Image 1 (spheres, helix red, strand yellow):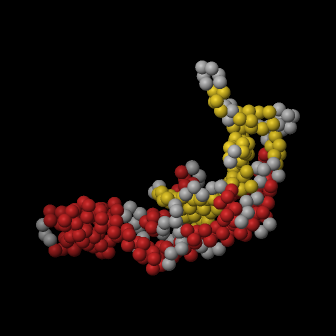
Image 2 (tube, rainbow, N blue to C red):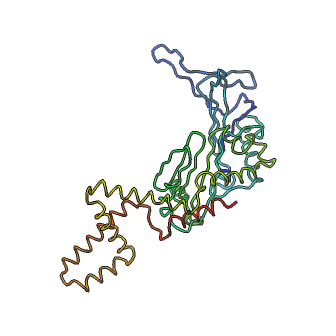
Image 3 (cartoon, one colour):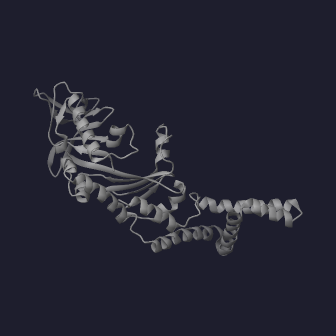
Length: 350
C-alpha cells in the first residue's frame, strides 16, 4: 500500500526555539552582494528569517521550507516526507493498514511539534504518494526482465538497471525491482523475508496527479473512505498501464525480441546472416534441450578423435554464449505469456 509520502503543510507555526537549519543565500565573494535570498518564515516571536531554504532532518522525517514562484505569485512552501512502513515497522517491506497509517501520521505531527513546528497533519495535502505491492514470484527476477521491456506504458520512457525496471514521465513512475537485492544494497539482513520478492511501486509525483488518480489530495480524506480508494486505484493504474494486454498480444510483443535478435545477426553477418542465425540457434536449442553433458557423451561415442570432439564442444559453447549475451535475463522455461499471466494475476488481484 502506501510507502513514501510527501506532504505540503498548508498551515503551520514555528517556535522561536525550533530545530530548523537555515541555509544562507548565495552572494558575490568580492562585494558581499546577496544574489539569492528569500523570506522563509516568521517565528512566533515575530522574528523573520531569510535564506535560500530551511530544513529539518530527523530519523523519522525530512522537512524543507523553500521559496516558490508560480503564476506571478511568490511564497514559501513547506514539505515533509517520510516512509509510513519504515516508521511503523522499522523497515518498508510490509504494508501498513489504515489504522497504522493514521497512527504514523500522528507520530509525524508529534515529531514536528517537538522540533518547533506546529501543524494539523490531516489538513496537509499530498504532493507525492508512493504505493507498492510485493509479490512472491515463481521464477528469479531475471526471468521476467525481457517481459518488462516489452510492456510499454503510453507517453512514458523506459529505463532498466539490472534488477530494476522503471517506466516514467513527469507525472508518475512505475518501478519494478528485486526487493531483497535492494535491501541488501542498503546493508539490511534479508533473512526471514520471503524469497523471490518482486516489488511493484507506483509513484505519483505531484499534488495534481494525486488528485486526478485518487479524487482527493488532502490527508484527512484518507481516513474518510479514501484509503480504500487508494488501494483500488493502485491496482487499476497497474492494469491500465503495464497489464492491459491480453495473452495473444503478449505473444505478438515477444516477436519483437526475435526481430531484434535477427537484426543483430543481419548487421553482424551481412549476406549469410540467416544461415548463421539458424546455425547458432540450432546449437543453442541442442544444448538447452538435451544438455551439454548428454551432447558431449554422444560426441565421444561417435567420434574417436579427441581434438574433433573438443572443437565441437567449444563450437557449441561459443554459439550458446552468443545467444546468452542477447538474453542475459534468461533462466525460465516458461513462455512470455505464462510469465505475464502470473504477474498480472498477482499484481492486479485486489
